[in-house]
Length: 181
Image (cartoon, rainbow, N blue to C red; front, side, top):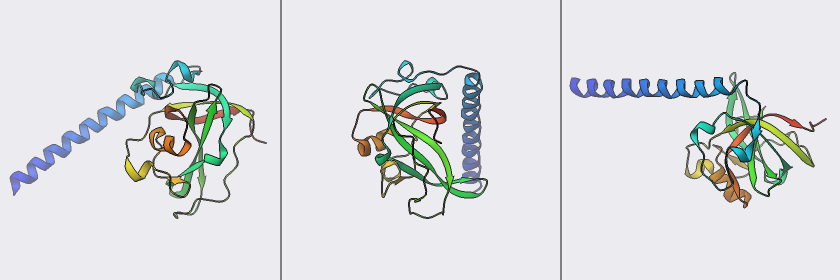
């Protein structure tokens, strides 16, 4: 029994060291991209293409029109112990391909119902600037839309919902022009 406990402890300890190394690498990526000017989304990823790991946290810019009727919320998200959702709206780019834009967090009841009071996305053509992020590693039901909601952001799962060619990953919105009044 003591041998089993020791083996599990060693395994978990190594897992913690690996996780720390992954986190340190991600922190370096973020820090290295903080002062950079945004680049065109097409210069980093291609519609229907693969996501290149060093591309994560690259500041990108893209223009297009929000597909508000295909907007979903990422349920069960918390900020400082407050329940809420992330609002994810597909943006059809000038090329016709779609990129997911995480427009941000909003407070809501911690239920399975999609909130009714979501601030609408801008109408007309917008230019979005944000951090390029990779898809969640979740699979199955977590990335499939159910009643306008998902548990994880994935251009693969949401691509089925949108029904158009998708850019891999998604953008965490920093700013957009024009802004919503």
